[in-house]
Length: 311
Image 1 (cartoon, one colour):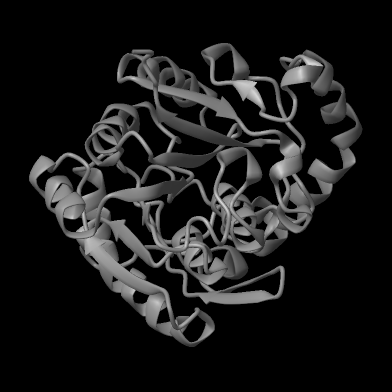
Image 2 (cartoon, rainbow, N blue to C red):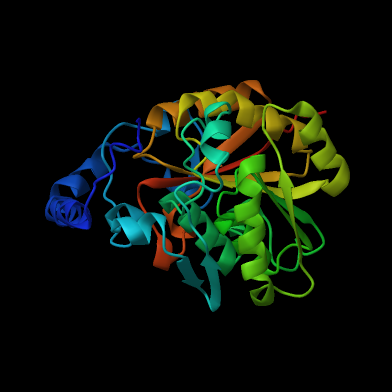
């Protein structure tokens, strides 16, 4: 039932969708004029994180989009992620374990969607593999003594990309307990591809569990960077996610979240509004920060940090 029953039964259905999407891209491009624009002097830092920045207007999907994959490539076969001289191999699964679907339904996930690679995760992972975005103020040298926390890691594409970049001494991958086995398998699968100086840990964390979040901070914090790929896909995720960010982010912590407009602009608007109420300020990074091999105009990279109050 639900989204599982809505999936195409045959690969040729997905192929038709791909051709139809490519055939309609000229009309999609016309939507760019309706998107919010930013002042020229602000372009280098990106657009302010405001609810109005996330419209329901359609955006063109890139040729590499996971949406166009056949069933096996999209949900079953390992995903080969090669960017900037780095290569990761990520096991995927319809569900991460027998308990995954049941546990997801009782959490903010709700749909057990976290055990495959999604566009937003690929965009953010590729950006981190190249280097931490300049707009965030991190560099491979400046961040190498810090820790990076990956929330809702799923296959681990974002967190393992952060580890492969060499920009952090420690990377912590987290997800529901029923997803941990998939995360551990992918961490082990890619261990030889990561710098020897980087330690990767895997932890089971339910966002609604304040005690687990507190223990995470005590054991691994403070965190220099918190990342998350495709976490803003349904409204019920907003408050639990902000609760975790509120708990783990200090004054010097940066947050990078990648979100797809095709999934839920409403959720992104709700998050932008609620984040201000939790004491965060943020921007949408300019599209030029995305790696050209995995760039997408429908994916937004949100950069948040604690609001700095003047003394």
